[in-house]
Amino acid sequence: MNTRIDLHQMPKGLLDGLMKTELYLKKSGLDLKLIELVKYRVSQINKCGYCLDMHHQEALALGESELRLHTLIAYKECPYFEDHEKLALEFAENLTLTSQTEVDDLLYARLKKYYSEEQIVMLTLVITQINSWNRINKTVGAVPGSYTGTFE
Image (cartoon, rainbow, N blue to C red; front, side, top):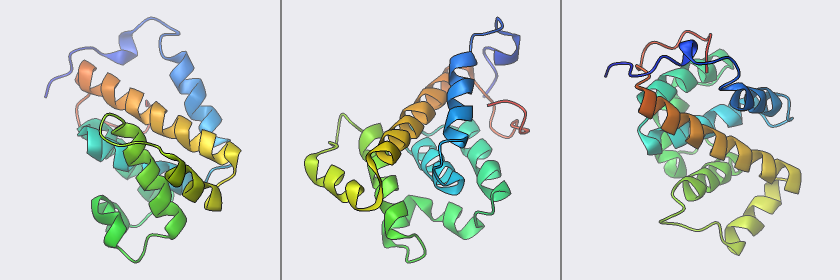
């Protein structure tokens, strides 16, 4: 894969909204490791190599284990994912694959067992944000392996 568009060379302010949202989410009170798990899982679904590389690095820096990252695609059958994490990941899958699945009342009721309304909205924002980043990075040709922790 070759870079098609260098986002570092884009006009100042182009990505400000997305970057402000990233900072907002980091300060939202959601568990940062959970945020990275969700971003990693959505990036798997969307097959975004650049984002997989990035969120692998970010998750490791937060203390996430290689085992959990390697088996994230099979989280439903892994005993070392907590129920609230599995539910957040299921929510991420449903919202990402919205043309195939629904965020129905049953899923929402299950989310309410573990998360407040505010946290559900924050999770929704995490999921929509990473879907946006996946699509941007796939379009511009962001090269997997080139993330250095200096640009998202």
